[in-house]
Length: 367
Image 1: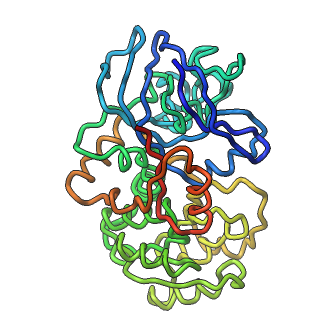
Image 2: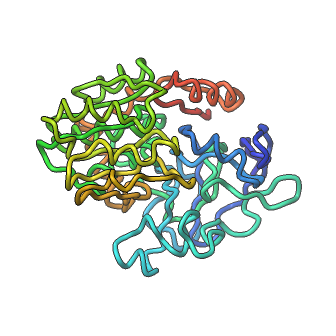
């Protein structure tokens, strides 16, 4: 099947190409992608040194299924999950499906095992990799059955697709990783797509005080819409956000917040959440910083916890239905998060708007 996809060259650029997607083999599903969310990871993946189909947040309609697929049928609306669990490895059996050692493109011992069958996606006569083994910036994708979660509520594809990463990561970091207690205080550093989902995760979990910190006043206004009770505009020259941390302490009775979440993706701020929390508080590194950073160990005093969860510790079959029900009840705001939609030929404009901070979330729509 011929399909249109955004293909990265691995050197910082991409092009819109016609590729070939084959029918699904055993345990695989062919999905017609209807919407794909954009985040900074998609932009970063342009420079990963691999020629591949971009995109890792997707929703669409099942067009075909292979043998062994029973949980979805042709015509079903579905969300794609990039942290594909095998359900058999040590981590999956330990309850850590987000850390699957078999299929995960991040933690897998052999990341290519999560790919669909060899040659499922071809370009110019060569097999083509897909970002996070799903490649959602494509009008069609063949994926493993474990990557496919049925949509169970009335929701636009544009809103459903961002459940596949941004919403799950933000909400899960609050509820699954931090296990935020009702009535507690939380600081959220960065009010982009993930940060806004942390904010509303804290709101849904019953936080009594939610302090949003950002350098961009437009994003702080978004933070207020999603549940922030206090807004702090940070100074770009505030090293480690230490001055902002003093303001947080004032707001939290002089001792810092109970929880703090780093959602900026800026390596220099990797230790900043530790400065925001009280003794025995919990700091969560949400954005996936992987670069070396220096940490003043005084920031750990005393009894503070620093967690670096992956994908909000997601168990897709359990968590995605919960998120959809929260959306259906009007508690999880997804429609409001979609600032702009684009067609695939406007992908560069979508990246530009994202990098300029103009969007809470941009989404590519396929007809």
